[in-house]
Amino acid sequence: MSSVASFEIAYHQYLDASSQVTAPLPAFVDDKQSVLALYKMMTLLRLFDTKAIALQRTGRMGTYASTLGQEAIGVALGHVMQAQDILAPAYREYGAMLQRGVRMRDILLYWGGDERGMDYQGAAREDLPICVPIASQVPQAVGVAYAIKLRGEARVVVCVCGDGATSKGDFYEGLNAAALWQLPVLFVVNNNQWAISVPRRHQSHAQTLAQKAIAAGMPGEQVDGNDVLAMTDRCSLALQEIRDGAGPRLIEALSYRLCDHTTADDAQRYRNENEVEQQRQAEPIARLQNWMRQRGEWDDEREQQLLQSCSEQIDVEVEEYLNMPALPATSMFDYLYQELPAALRAQQAELKERQ
Image (cartoon, rainbow, N blue to C red; front, top):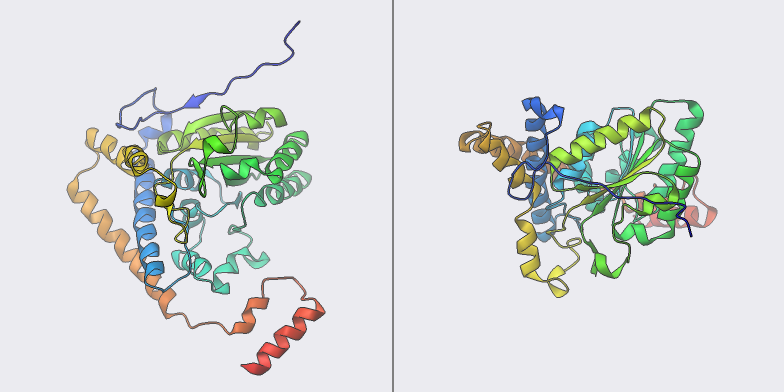
């Protein structure tokens, strides 16, 4: 008997849960402004997240998917992507969206059930991301990457999904095609340990989710998704390799969903609170802040100034969201098809007559 194939999955981390350095730091860390930008964006996202939940709880928007404890993933991606790259997110990548031109009010409108929050999905705003259901964005991302390769463009598609999405056929089919055609796409799996109420251990017997990339024929690795330095470095390297023609890559970002799946969920019904509290000690914002304080690059005064500045930005966006007039009921038809079928046109006309 002889072995015909072997593989291993690397794990990358620079700052552990105690903010201690575990490996030589990447070169970009020498740029203090770059690190500070990461921290500021995560802080803004955390405060926006809190405000969005408050709006939902008080009946001023629909359901909402919190990104609590997972801020480092989207923020790192938005930090290293180039303007011409394409983002195909799931629904927790607000950090990347905000850095790519989506306004906070756009996100509130989307979750608020107002079709105007969908404006950034249209062809007229192709510079902004789309937001689609679980795993179905994977084949779409592959299709976009195929078009990019045909055109010979120096762009990369970044496709983000959750751990639950890796159990769906869309995911496997997309990875297989991307590797076969050597497409410019980076797959990022936000492994936050929960697919709604299904824990990671009950949905896949694979030792890692990163190794699913190996079966498709592309490199896969694990990164500490709560370490924004590691996420920034590994995503930057992967994007450059893809841009240089090395084909697709997959990063499994290990995080933890400290929040409910959405505001329509009650995680206390299926999750142990002791586990949540233990995982809270590893969350990304405190981890980076403590490390910055250790280096003398952060203090209470600067923290309060940042919190005040972020709160003011959020208040402006929320005020604009709340003051926007409601759209007519007929607008529900606007984003279904490029050209409405006859049956829906009749319904639209009937509804217009009743208004």
